[in-house]
Image (cartoon, rainbow, N blue to C red; front, side):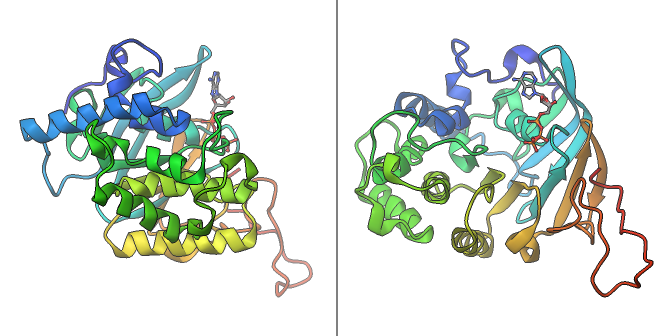
Amino acid sequence: MEAEETRESGVAGEPGLAREGYAVAAESGAAAESGVAGEGSRVAGESGVAGDPAADPISLRRATATLGGRPVLRGIDLTVRRGEVVALLGANGSGKSTAVRSVVGQVPLSGGELALFGIPRRRFRDWARIGYVPQRTTAASGVPATVREVVSAGRLARRRFGPPRKADRAAVQRALELVGMADRARDPVSALSGGQHQRVLIARALAGEPELLIMDEPMAGVDLASQEILAGTLREQVAGGATVLLVLHELGPLEPLIDRAVVLRDGCVVHDGPPPRAVGQHALPGHDHVHPHAAPDAEPIRTGLLT
Ligand SMILES: Nc1ncnc2c1ncn2[C@@H]1O[C@H](COP(=O)(O)OP(=O)(O)OP(=O)(O)O)[C@@H](O)[C@H]1O
């Protein structure tokens, strides 16, 4: 594995590095950028650099990152194995989003190593294998677009610059159906609720039929009905063999799907193993609590993992 070099990391907007970032395109919804990521995918395919088929989709070692002059990641190890569903947990500001943004090339690592599907980050080009749902943004980004157009942007990395083919249109339709938005396909995204926006962003990631799905707080601000739809969608992806990394504040309806939890505190991993038992609606920072069935004089359950 090669050491990460800052200059190799995909900084959005840095010349020559747009090719690195399907995630950049995914966040901005910018067609041109996604198209460039598509070129990366083609290059990887042609050169046969597919990596070891059994390699871990994400392998982050001793990763450090600095933002605004402050160390935000302080030597984290994060491995996500094939077919696993891993939850990345931790208090506000512990570095969860920075960790996933470093994985998708949006935050440069100042040290450590990152490999994607067994390929060192600096040589990885096959961004179509990764679907990224950024932390809550609007799907519209001020650009007038329909739901179908936004979801279609998620297909660009697979399209290799050509017009959409039948398979592309079918993948977009399927993604819309998976998140229950097929009946809104022609609507402008500006007319959607927050939870519907989130479903569209997830459909955009799913349209690329990624092997690895990375979602940053997919349930944030999403109503219960949408949460159930998203949980069902994710269950289907996992059943189909997808690998998933989720940044979460609480496990909620996704709890039954989670294989492993990695908990960050102040940019360091403080737990890597089974989801902490008390994690859930009530065990998050500031939410130490007494169960209703506990003895009246019982101490609050304090996992210490999240606070
Ligand atoms: N662009 C930036 N410039 C400077 N500091 C930043 C930047 N982005 C994030 N940070 C800081 O880095 C730290 C980690 O932020 P990050 O968003 O990774 O945390 P998080 O665990 O995802 O938090 P939350 O649960 O609130 O989303 C925070 O202290 C944050 O203020």
